[in-house]
Length: 176
Length: 397
Image 1 (cartoon, each protein chain N blue to C red):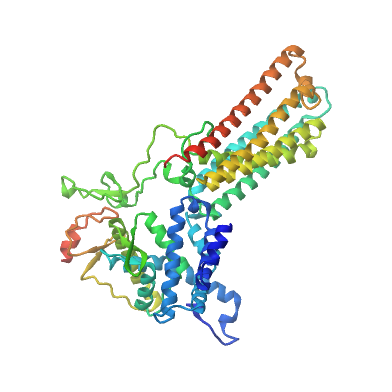
Image 2: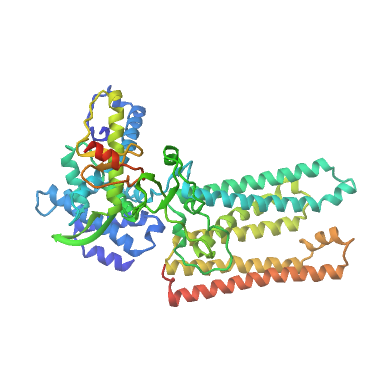
């Protein structure tokens, strides 16, 4: 966010190199993990045809009102790393003019995303009183594993949490 | 080079700009990534498509101008930064990644052990001097401690620098498997990666439910317990690594040879000239320094071979270059027999009360020729590999 600031008052805090470096470093650390979850969430929307890098960046910018912007130099290595890790698979196709690499979430990627989303959601909920903002989790649609925070859909027939193996059938039936 | 120049001349200005940018990115990519041409082609094609997509958008769907292209390239960041993101692999642990940490500690222990042993041998050679009173026992021990500490410190610094470099470049242990599995000499890197170590079971879930564990790979979470009420708890672990026959990995051999060659080479150059080794004959000090230089040169060549991976031409050139220091070593070993003032007479001085000159001559000749024979075999093996690479290339992974 601070990187996007083009002009500022000379006496503003941002003018101080130490402050600016510190904040930029904090932002970049915080965004690294969040970028991965959001990229996977967008990929999840394209289970069949997949999505290519540039399209993904555009969608991310639109969805987050240009607040979460991932640099190209970060996105492509990230996609590649996730593909190597079996989270994504890719395919080169020529659908609209140029040949492009389309990325699709794998089954393992889906499971990983459920866990990451659940953990992130519960984390935000937990820190919300400290941060003085409110978080309203979609508890009518999902339950969050009490052991590992994995996000589990309530309408699926699950006996165990896929991530930590804890018995959740009873909890789901109670919630249902 | 001229073909590349002709290609550039045939391009329009905007295409040339894009190509120059992509060429620069390619140059900055780490060797392990450039190993497979397909990797590089994929990365560069993706970046190129991105540049044209973004530039077309800036030009409102029209043909992008040179200014549009420049703007997109500026926004993308420097080639070093982009390449740097591809190097970001492994879990940071101090300056060396967790994945390389096991290998790092192993190499440090091996080298430190060897150095302590060598220093101990040097100390033994001076024991007769304590008997005739020319040096005290305290001095003997202090020279052993000084020699050990200095050599281990030098080795530690050199090995650490090399592993920091490998971590910074994003190397993982498996990158050194690229060259195949055919080599004779091997440092036990089999447990190089942390994942190969015995699994530490995660007991967090067990503290909640005390039922027995069941190990299931992440990708196949299929579980149908017969008695549902037992509420079994599973741990997520990686599939058990293949155990059994130890494989020889050429890349890891080159890496270990490189790292240790550089460390021992530098130590052999510096240490003989330290005050606590003043008792060594001057000729022997020079001999050690020369073997250090050949060790250092060969170490650098091997280290570079491990990094460059499956680039046939470069590997052949490095194998060829490696023949020179090995050949020089043969001359150095041979000199021990025929220029007795280097070491022969000095060593014989220690053992002459126990064995005759003829026996010593026989033992020394056998030892030197075994070492020379080993070096010749090694050179021959390198030469055969160099030739085979030309015909067969690298074996499939």
